[in-house]
Image (cartoon, rainbow, N blue to C red; front, side):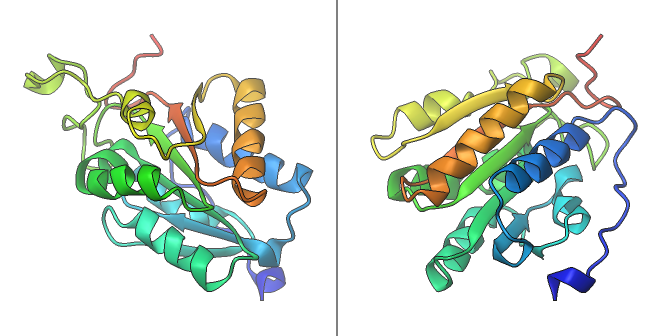
Length: 203
């Protein structure tokens, strides 16, 4: 079935960091020689929620904030799958924040990649849990999910990369996939990925 699927064309803005995450994920899966029929990409909402449409493999668009329970269920149903959950900071840290805490604690054998752009880009730039104080009148300090993960004893793989550094991002993505596929638990990779349209901190 995966052989007949033709990936769609990405809808992201020119310069969006999601392109870098997509390229790193494709390259890492290919380098690790994971067959297409053993790949399962589960995406959430927001700009990154369409990422599964751009790979020739099984994909599922989960409900708002429910990437991690869906990914965990897929892995439990078929342990042979390489299950990768992807989402943005709104999906992963707002409505999905409770699931992230419990996933760190349970440590399921999935990879979770969060593209953190510090804003709700798809809905035109509202403040997200990782927006800096002062952004769009946000009065709260930004959430640091790596520190959150470090505070939970079950966590076994926490990493942070940058969408503008493709060599490092590929290394981190590959390491994350190796960790989860070798039965060592959940790998969590946060990718700092400024929104070029609504929160352009590249400048």
